[in-house]
Length: 308
Image 1 (cartoon, helix red, strand yellow):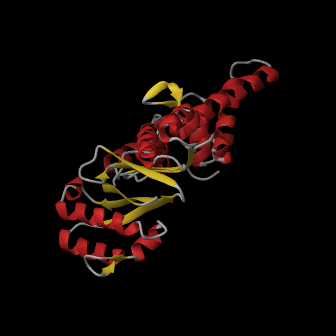
Image 2 (tube, helix red, strand yellow):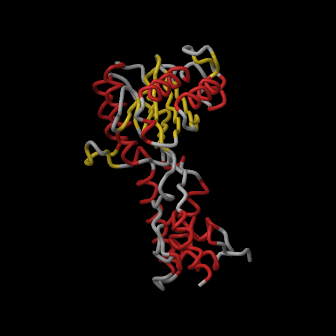
Image 3 (tube, rainbow, N blue to C red):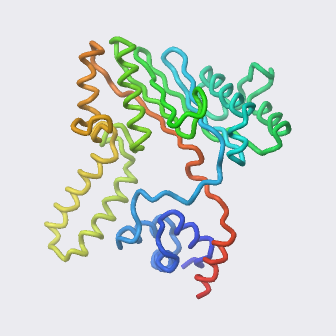
């Protein structure tokens, strides 16, 4: 069994919100396997599935830009929110998003593309901005969506400026119908995605590994009831059906009208659009997602707990 370190306990607590001693025990029970420890805590009812990892250290902005039937969303990080409110930084992020539309949307392609205002690559332009603004920054993520016929709707939640904010969403809709009406339903669906963070568009598209982890947790939880295996199997299948409904976009209750699923709302919108609508893709970037902040005092607290 691998040594259970203070850093491991700290990471598990930040990811699950469980107590330090529970985290230490979970790691001990699972041989230091972080993912298995998370599932162990969940199976015991100590941690929740939707608990995110600790507070983010990444500041900066999310930017969106669209052109024709293509749109992009980018994340550019800075060290402090003060810089994110700087006009020069905002103009930089807005410019990077516009440049990204002409690329395939990958970070490497965007970084290598020419930034018109400087005549240099985006990467070198960011380096120049670091020297000017005096704070480290980087292009962290970028995603592009496009359709042959239809729209890619965009949405920025709590926008700080045109096309800039802390959460950006793209949703690609294929349709031969009226583009203005299509963009209207697309924006509503993008707002829904911002609120619910679905894992996939359709239940069958949920990552198999994620689904298997959920199933295993449900099995362990159901076994605690002491019921026979055939009843447990039915309980697990019922919980898995509910899980897929909750995490797949089209089966979720539409936040704008909870009486309808997203699929039903889109079907209803086809009347205004005048043609069938297919959800072809989605992207959701939350600023700093997955980046953790150093907590030196907390680390010392964890270290004391581990030694104990």
